[in-house]
Image 1 (tube, protein in one colour):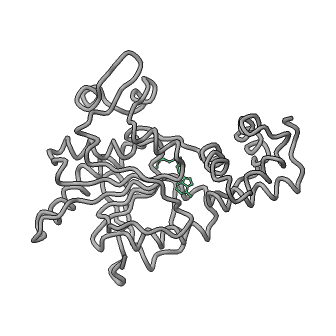
Image 2 (tube, helix red, strand yellow):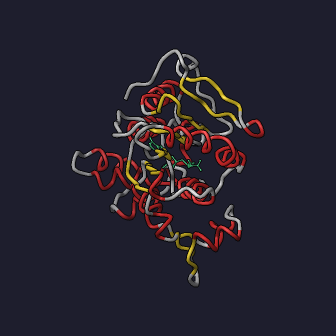
Length: 283
Ligand SMILES: C[S@@+](CC[C@H](N)C(=O)[O-])C[C@H]1O[C@@H](n2cnc3c(N)ncnc32)[C@H](O)[C@@H]1O
């Protein structure tokens, strides 16, 4: 049942994965497809990967397509991942943004978007920083999105195991923001109240109703090829407040979008991006 895919099957699957997720599979794609989709052969009673492919292509099989997305996406994440950007948020970015929000006549909320939030650790880390800074839940809102329903459901639930919390949450924050029962650490309700979770496909046209002061889009564009990556950051640009900040992954680059963004180096060499003054973003 788990025999190697031939070049024809491989080409069809690569194209399909690209359509579903924007992800360009690398040279390990043959192994990856077999490994990640193997469980779905059994679930959908398919005799082989071609059978699964043609079934998933049927217009009314959104259930299979959602499962394929859940399986093929890499959801590696952790609380306070890479630490330095979170320090920069706490020391430089949030004080500046909060000042802007408080100065504005209507005292507007600070709006943050965690794009490709995976199972929620990134969004909750940001919320913890704001609470630690004394910012009330009424003063900010975090929109957390991902393509994977499974990831979004887990993020919304906010329940983590020992390994997940020990990978980044300092003990003092664990006590303040989590309720512990025998096996899980549950994010407390007061931390959840300023977060909303939704499914957004970053490789397709999307429209969120807000312009954000901070957009965090880390470790997702690395899976896209150059053109979809540039298109993604152009779409993100249109959702960024003119004075806002974009944070990308520490190993990522934007490609040739210097007409839209300029780099701003902050704490300990962390680079954030801001809208290039020449062109104000329009939603
Ligand atoms: C490696 S995780 C990164 C999580 C988090 N941003 C971080 O840096 O820790 C990549 C996430 O991107 C999501 N993803 C992949 N393709 C996507 C797409 N086209 N639209 C939205 N999210 C996508 C995956 O489901 C996964 O949760």
